[in-house]
Image 1: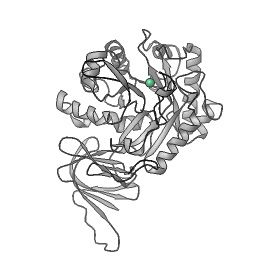
Image 2: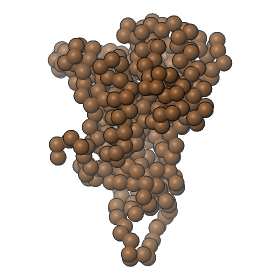
Image 3: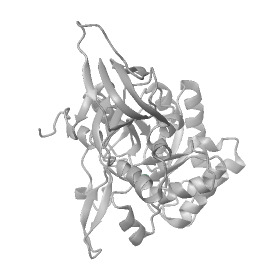
Image 4: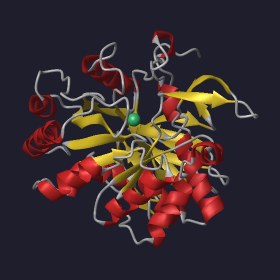
Length: 392
Ligand code: ZN
């Protein structure tokens, strides 16, 4: 049992200052003052005075087995470590393959997800990679989603990108249909995570799918929607019509805005709020562990780095500090919204009977403490639990 005392709770909606009781892997009670009289039970107390308690983050697009490889074999990025996620506040991760579905496959992705589960957090995966027809574990999209517990959908399927397999509309929509029906039959989201490139066709494929078939707009979760202003504008419209959209975060949003025209999450969210987009329809993910070019101060290319989940909390800070967006609105993108869109049961909210996945933030909104499935993973900004092969 754990009691978190006097935390200012954002569930993500603001709830005020309360105590939270965790029993095992669950949130058991949320109350003004929880008291106990059982001396035989060991209770861990956490003093959260002055800190904000928020749901553990859901990072819904991470290359957990590594990504990249587009600059040759030596540019393949390594697998993610447990503490890369936990120190960034992430307690639930959705893994995916990217450009390379040959030297990495869905079986290794599933194995890595199981490893992260064993190490203490919760992991799901998408089956497939950029390419269509999709490579699966069982040989069929429907079977993968229905039979393999951790598979919640397909992706990231690439469109409007020079690295995409240039699928025909028929190829694309057939894969979408299989994912949808398999999702219905297994109580999963069956979502299609769509990688959007810089190409001029933008979201044409999605618009055709919505206009020409019976498949609802909510079956898709397009990602990298903020990679340029023109694409973002189309995606604002798409979201206004009821579609879900996923921003990709960045460690240095100002730099990327200046050099590549990327729309930062904070500015983009402000726009969505002004446009009256449904507050349930946006998410933010890190594209973590994918390869990322690094530039020096003179903006010269100096090498390849790795995307990190720490961009999520950075985006939250920018929303609050730069754009005056209430924390509860920004938090939705990495808590209750992905949980709902991806049908991740018992995730993304601080409520009784939900999983005990929690983060404590200090006054500057830095991640101080992280609890995953009721277990203390990070405390006083230091990881307490390490992955199997991490140096301690
Ligand atoms: Zn992508």
